[in-house]
Image (tube, rainbow, N blue to C red; front, side, top):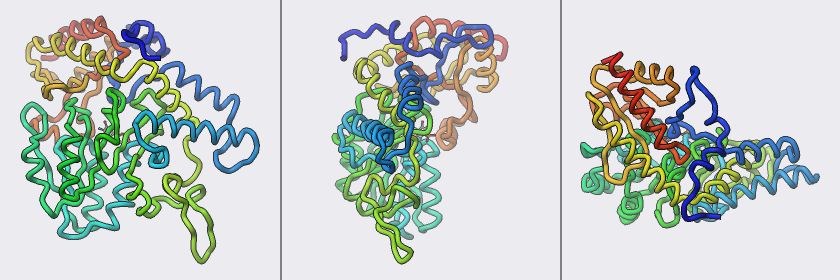
Length: 408
Ligand SMILES: Cc1ncc(COP(=O)(O)O)c(C=O)c1O
């Protein structure tokens, strides 16, 4: 049940790991863009599956097999309702990386040819970049890049101008994992659609932090990963328009994805099962279904508002630290702060922060071309979730001032 003002302190208590210490200090987990922590409800759902219902799906007629199948397909239905799409358009897979590779090899590889272009934005994660490079190499298509403004927002005029007739596919992040920029994917997909360009939206950093209605975005494919959504690792989702999924050949072959197998020809299953060869991550998706229930219980709008508050607090607390440079200041950005401190290497900062109990990510965040744009070799990234607190942010700012004096 969604309440008007969630009790954030009680909600934090739902995450067992957040009570632990690291290096003798209370853990402060600011790496949720990397992977989120898991509430007890998710851990218990996975535990209950293995203790009470463990069996393979869609194969056995016995009771456990039926229970496992019902729970697994129930998770697909929950995800579909959460995202406002049809359940038979949701391919359950291992994560965003797998989902985008599936589109690359099954949709793009048979269709693209020399003279075609794939349009990507400068802020894509490598998962929405490298598969397209591999397809470009094999088909002779070329990659075009849509550039950014200095604040880390997309230059929309340039993006629309780059949608020339040679462009057959556009890959765009809904939210940047480095900058937090929220791209206007609805408007972008509308422009692409007018020009017959197929759109692949990477929603990895969006679905955990805001209400996402895939139908209203109007894209062709939407991918995200379950482990950033309070779900288990090894879970992910590809949504595709039914007409695309039906026209796509299988990506991997094996059990579950067939209707009939003969040595002189195999009849493939209908989507989404056509793309789910082999035994899936049954327990993982049951956990992800529990994560969706949990998040809906809080309310995605409430989560979004809470994280905006935390971001505002953190931006204010960090901005006046001497030598601080924040990458990504677009209005309405998500709760991610990538930063550098003059004279201090990002890995050194992250290491010293870890000694103080703070988990932040340092490096290139699987977005090398984006860091090249900003002319830096690494940044630190503090990413927040609704289970973080204002107090953690204040302690973080204090710790950062302290470690800065040791390094800069
Ligand atoms: C924007 C974005 N896309 C894709 C990915 C890849 O997700 P996964 O490694 O779960 O496939 C990530 C993960 O960091 C991401 O942030």
